[in-house]
Each structure stands twice: as C-alpha cells, then as structure tokens.
Length: 103
Image (tube, rainbow, N blue to C red; front, side):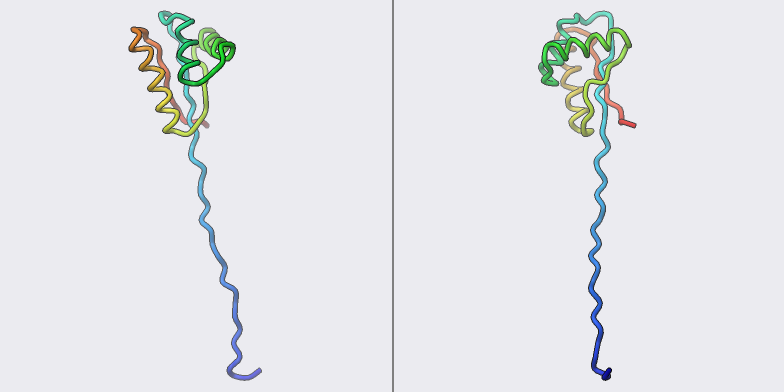
C-alpha cells in the first residue's frame, strides 16, 4: 500500500430509545349513596361503554369495593377520572374515580 491510501470506516448511527409512557388505571370506588343507574350513565357518557359493560363495571365495584375501568396514558386517565367525578358532584352524589400507575 502507498502512503496516500486511507481506509474509510462507516459511521454508526445511534438512535435514542424512546421509552413508552407509563400507563395509569382509572379506578371506580364504590359508595353506598350513588344510584346504580347514575353510575352506569356516567360510565356510558365518559368512558363510552355499552349498557351491559357499564352494568358489569358497576357491579364489580359494588361487590369488591373498587373496579379498574380503563388503563391509558396519564393525562387521559386523569382527565376522564376528573370528568366522571365532576358529573357525580354536579348531581349531588359522592361518586369517586381515582387514578394510579399501572404496575
């Protein structure tokens, strides 16, 4: 080889790994004062559930004390939980939805 020969090495491209956003659970808490029909109405309005699915969610919360309604991104979960809780407050019921990180 002569002195002017150079070897070219290909550049490696590094792509940053993007972590998926952490998911959050929206949880329906049971209370003894909010009518069952109203809970189903809220589940249908806020979470776009069918009558049957809303009934099953409401009964699960009634029997077990809590029920996971949906798992989604944090901002969506907090917005849906606040909207559903606010509907209960406007109607004068202690209906409560909370959020917590999925494990």
